[in-house]
Image (spheres, helix red, strand yellow):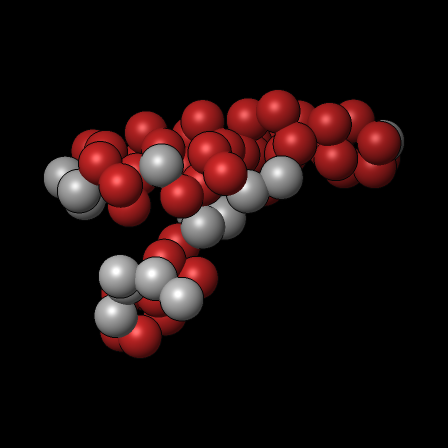
Amino acid sequence: YSQVSPDQATLLGMLHTIGTLPVLTYAEDNQEILEHGDLLDQLLYEFHPKLGYAILKSWQFPEEYCQVPLGYI
């Protein structure tokens, strides 16, 4: 139970891993990363929460929304 409306929860559910997109785009341009699945997993684990936060912040989402990717592990 939370103060988040169903529409907000749906939006945040779609955006909680938005930080994976820049990592995957980078990996597509660097084949050696794709060849080493463990490396890609590590890059996603380390960077997607911070990148997700930065993306949502740059889109001027409320701070509590920007925090959502940081809580995803």
